[in-house]
Length: 129
Image (cartoon, rainbow, N blue to C red):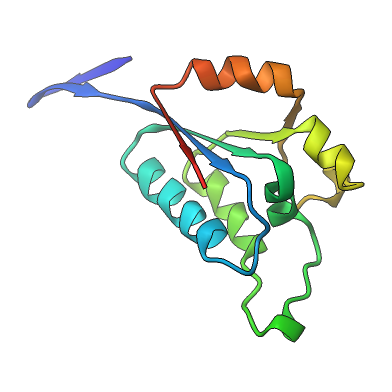
């Protein structure tokens, strides 16, 4: 996909960010969210995927007082402000953790692992954290 402006062709890449880790205990989840927002701000085609313990990043009503960290789960609501609309959750990971889409802070598309592989293959860049 190319957009042309006065300076010549603008190349738009398809970036997929894969979140595999629990939301707290490391900086990966928050850092990945920040990178997604930056990429989207530069008008790239951004997709976000949550698999394994990464699905817990989206869980509603997270209480982080006992671990002394700020709950950043509501920040995922900013994805919509940045026009990040392709947000996927792996069905098997969600089910393995006893969660449903009603347990999540933002709307997502739930996809089976096999379908997710097809979507990943269509990306120019896949970054996993």
